[in-house]
Length: 344
Image 1 (cartoon, one colour):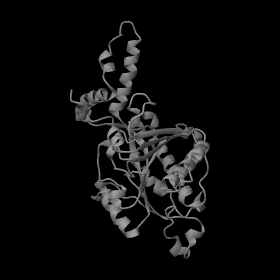
Image 2 (cartoon, one colour; image 1 turned 135 degrees about the vertical axis):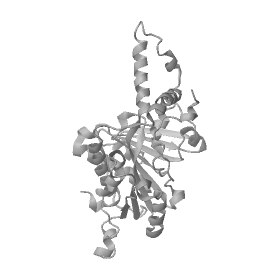
Image 3 (cartoon, rainbow, N blue to C red; image 1 turned 135 degrees about the horizontal axis):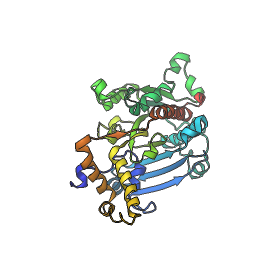
Image 4 (spheres, helix red, strand yellow; image 1 turned 90 degrees about the horizontal axis):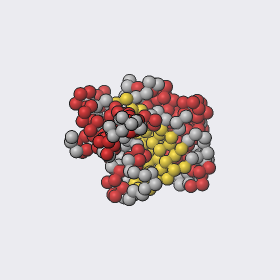
């Protein structure tokens, strides 16, 4: 068997899942801080992973910064009300990471609160980039968000000077740059040109992600201030969209829509091994696999699966409904955070 580096660790875009690789949830990881809380909104849980220094970067394999994971596993059952609660939570955290330090402090994060009125220190010009391929359902989240997000950048020229400012509305523009197979250009190349021309103060990049656990598909939102590398979760690395590459702060909003087949097989084998250990005649059958660490198990499974079937990814059967719902939830969260008049 090749060393784990031959196939790499379990594919996931979620910092929370990287943190979970370390044994014992309470064990401290140097250079990484972890906080969890439940906001006022029912059925929602937030986990904040902060990578503080290079030790944390090395341990987690992710860039230095803040990674918020908002989980709402009962989202589908909650219907419109569940979507509204998730939108309000996302809006509050967007404002906090965008510069409003008064929103989302410890007390408010525990008790919950609606976003405050539009503040002077918040970004006034925002570019929303909906990444992905509209015609591939699991990858269509970004473009779908833009379908539900009203743009406001043109309001002043259309309705008169200071129209937006008087109504507490940011200047929001949007672009769905497509994928390289459609345009022949890197997403970063397209956005660099737009940023240079329109000069936003903040870029919000929205993309579909890959997860480690099937339970997080279509019901989890990751929000980070580190930017994003499109396609990294499925091994399709592209130029990163970061403050360094674009010249402006970049917030990334992602929802996991696929999980690697090898990860599912690993979970299945883990459950099977436990079942075998409970039987008299089968006890000890899975001892070899049990003694392997999670990364070694995953590497072995990929070494067996991928030469035969290729790198396969799995998505839920109701992914169409989940992506459409999350597209509306994220669009409403952005409107609530930055365009107070557009709450509907």
